[in-house]
Amino acid sequence: MFDNYEVWFVTGAQLLYGGDAVIAVDAHSNEMVKGLNDSGRLPIKVVYKGTVNSSKEVTTVMRAANNDDKCVGIITWMHTFSPAKMWIHGLQELRKPLCHFHTQFNKEIPWDTMDMDFMNLNQSAHGDREFGHITARMRKPRKVVVGYWKDAETQNKLSVWMRVAAAWADAQDMLIIRFGDQMNNVAVTDGDKVEAEMRMGYHVDYCPIAELVAYQNKVTDEDIDELVETYKKEYEIANEDLENREFIHQVREAARIEVALRRILKDKGAKAFTTHFDNLKGINQLPGLASQRLMAEGYGFGAEGDWKTAALYRTMWFMGQGLPKGCSFLEDYTLNFDGENSAILQSHMLEVCPLIAEQKPRLEVHPLGIGGKNDPARLVFTSKEGEGVAATVIDLGNRFRLIVNKVDCIKSKPLPKLPVASALWIPRPNFEVGAGAWILAGGTHHSSFSYDLTVEYLEDYAEIADIEMVVIDENTTMSEFKKELRINEVYYMLNKALS
Ligand code: MN
Image (cartoon, rainbow, N blue to C red):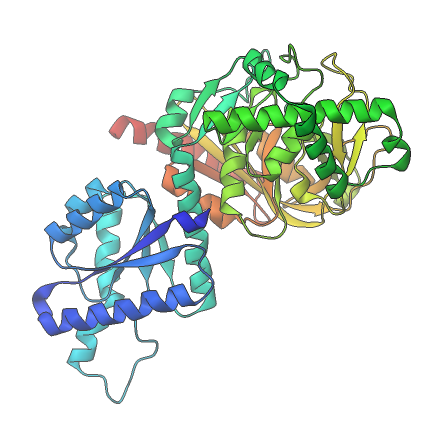
């Protein structure tokens, strides 16, 4: 899906050094953009949009970026000194994500041959500071990437920002369908949907479950046969289950729900959805298997009406497309106190994404002691080991807060009496501080988890969305974390008062 997008590269210059200088700046920029595209490290095509030498030219390119659906963001670079007052009007209008790239065309100083002409061309050292000043002065959200443009590390930082910028574009026309409301009385999964749309772009709608039932009634036996064949190919199924009529019946019912759910989401143009086990009138079983499989395809999912987590999952899945280890919706399930290895079992009633599975998932059917429906089909597995990030967005009334915790997934164990998919993680810096800080910050019991993303991705997201972000990692201490929350409280209160 990154193929539909591009990132624009705009080089700041001015006419002070003559037309020849601008021609050289242009040639260097072309070479850089070509080098970036040929590096194989950037997921999205970079398109060079020329030099800008005046306020009018800056404004023109910013307006064009705003109006071009393919453009997910702008990279700016000041090859020469570009007096930044000429950027004011354009930056005021720019509504796409901004990345300020502090690099230089030439790698090392040519000590013996450097003259004034060379210096006039290679002015990023001061030119990018002038640009940095105006973006700071204007409080313009942006990412600053510093490094030589041919270095892998530098290109990887651009790649992170590009993935986030694309996910941001994706979120601007994200429709989230809620089948049912929040679970009764639950506070943390609720929030201001109007503010969410203004701030993060996505739109949250409800859909009566009766509409899904109507779709379900149109699913044919052939549709179900085809999907069940896919299940047999993709998952382990016990031989005795294949001969068990009740098992086959429930799996076919699960397939019916999956076909219906995929069709209704497609017809509505939805990228995410929520369900609620208490609101399934006309549906025979909780859509566990369907939710698992749709998540793996990139649909955002939140249980019990949790639309914020559904949105965040879709966004994190989108950022991580093509990366190897996967992501999932998860819930803090049960604690395991074990000294230094104290950990939190992550699972849900059924809805854990198979992208994080360590081994081929097993398709099983078991009773579910909640919701009063038939025994639902589900994929059962334990997760891969390794580090990742768990994230959530909460609504604090005057702002959204993104909470991110670095976690280490350790070996989980099968649960023969609770056959669900699970992960087992130790939050950083350790269970006590990790869980303590998350709770202190007001974090949900639901989270969106990814092995492939790092804190940097979420930091770029929070910057673009201009929302609060707090990170819990190996450096977190409770006393410093408390201070950060208190300082942020003042910052956002003042920010609101002054804006
Ligand atoms: Mn839940």
